Length: 191
Image 1 (tube, rainbow, N blue to C red):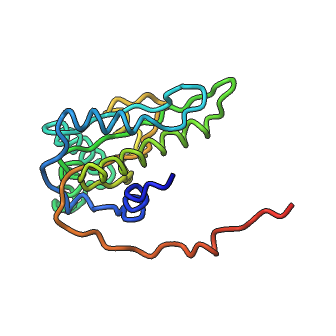
Image 2: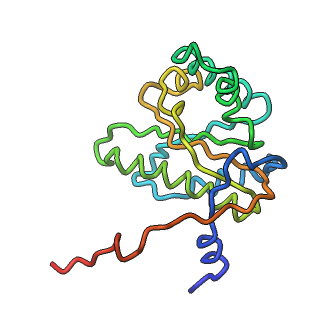
């Protein structure tokens, strides 16, 4: 059965840059609902190979200080404006959800499937936020790969950031971007 509202929602999904976001963000109850929906993904073996870190309020600023510190360690001569940009990376949207991939070797479940499951969590979260009327975007950026930052955020050595999902409100209409031509990315197996 075709659900036209769902098709329209998926066809209209656009990322809103964090700089274009503001409050309000989801309430505590809405955030719980978003995370519950995000976790409803294919998960071979029921491993739940992902977890969430919520950044809101002062937590966004504390994470920003950590990011700026790592940036300054690598760029001691950086302009103050650039350092401030790094410090505010997680401060534009009222809520940022860090989706952590906990993929690990398993006797039956390939790590790759576990990583894909974490990616599906990010996408479910973005689509659910849009369905609730919020703006959302899924980003990583350099600090998602910096072990100093990851350690400071409490990630174990084997864990990785699948994405930082920024959720808030926006009056900006995200611009459409060029999408792949379907015929150039599709083939039919003929045997």
